[in-house]
Image 1 (cartoon, rainbow over the protein chains, first blue to last red):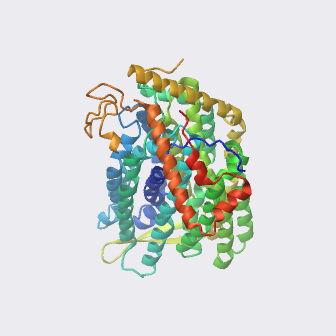
Image 2 (cartoon, chains in turn green, brown):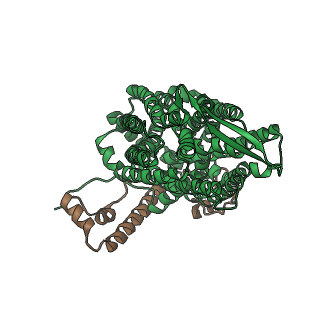
Image 3 (cartoon, rainbow over the protein chains, first blue to last red):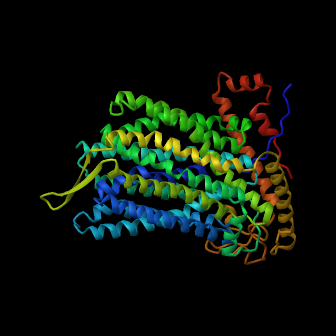
Length: 501
Length: 89
């Protein structure tokens, strides 16, 4: 006879779950192009802007992000409409985001006859700021929706896992297949397009994905967690952030782990300058994606054995060990593709499993802190809490790209610009040496061991993280009761109910 | 979504760009009205979708691998548990 098992009620259906994930796929298709790997390459090599100016801009805009995301979080938390507080933003954002994406990547093509560096730099600042603004307007409500689409933790885990899986798959088309292959085809003269045209075309494709897929979240995903009717003041959101100790610990952990993201920047330069073929990154990512698939398939099992805090620690330690081993295994043959490619592939397959766990758990724990704050104060602040997640993700990208770009001349990598007879300009890159080692060696080290070791710093705050086990279960049970009471009360009165106290 | 077009209480038509939380016809809170019943409805719809998915997989699984796996583990078959699952009121 079969054993009876009590299953948690599922509110989010298969179709809605899939649409939520596909929306993230559309969003990540665009974001993938803005990740550290290509942004630096685009500005320096395609747009012809000096590394110093690029590094400064990325640093300044990275700092702007520290203000921008929480402001957006505060605005979202203040929003009260019949569609909810998150969906209106998701319905509005895709069109302006698509337009700003095309304008950004089309910049070098639009300004190809401009020799004035100042004009290029001003365009770079404006177009990037515009894209960044609309991206934030969509990103904060999207991830906040993962905590508001259902009161059930399993629904949330499923939605996040689906979103992460599909974003890896669809977003991967941009970063793993489309861009590297197009760059190689253009560099090797297989297609008649210059890199400027390649990036502009990819920008248009990216915009199509934004409109076609990212819109799905606003159109078809519901908000199901009952919110208090009264609006919180904008500054309340910041005040409550300070009271949320588990969230503050997560922020600290993410900030400490920021430096480790330089691997992305050096990865792009390593593949183009040392192995001389960007498409290797595609091969490696596809192979590494197998690890991600295993991770997504096994996360439910792993979560039965470990809680979120333990998983956050494991997800940092094992990839750090793998990165260190990869560095030593390839340190003498970093320029021999048939030795390093299998090493990087093996490392990426194994760390891909833990990256997949990390992508789900790191989002889920933010949802836990939202429940915790509601339990403690009566106010749900998804917007503010998830703005931290998006802010840290972007901060990691910008600071690491800025730091990585600034480090390029230090390790002996230089770029010069040459004016061609037809009046257009061409950038030429050159690897030399630094600290007694060739630049190629440093690109390898910064791609493997350096990020591995620095990522361990992110573990420290989790030593003090207490939102887990029985405490979390009690909070969830009490919140369920409170929400039921709140819904009943609003039904009978139809007016504003304050659930605090 | 269909439910965005009409008030769940009075059935009054709602304009696309009408954003306020209260119904312009009867004044009920459009977001929270009858929330428990709507959640229950969503749970039934989700269970039906899961059920349909498992049944589709069951038809594809000619070697009855899913059935063998669940029987071996002593767990209820997924299409059965989906059928039995009833939302908590």
